[in-house]
Length: 114
Image 1: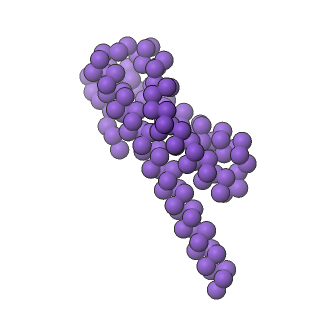
Image 2: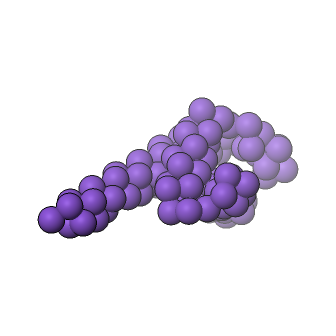
């Protein structure tokens, strides 16, 4: 019985951590979508956007990294491994916007929030 409760508690904590990380990722992505849309509306060039984007949405990026790092450490990763993985994940979200900006600019389209 105790073993079952321990497994259930661990599973619920893991599910909550994953949900927190996903919520943080969506928050960062949506913030970047707003930033990207504002830059597109101002007709900012792709080069200038790529320079500005890494500093946009710093609070949301930090929240995403923290949530993923916490999740990874709960699954047994070291702090450095968890930090590296979390940073790579945040960089991937950022890359999707910096890589797609020129396409949005040339087609006069906008990113869609999640």
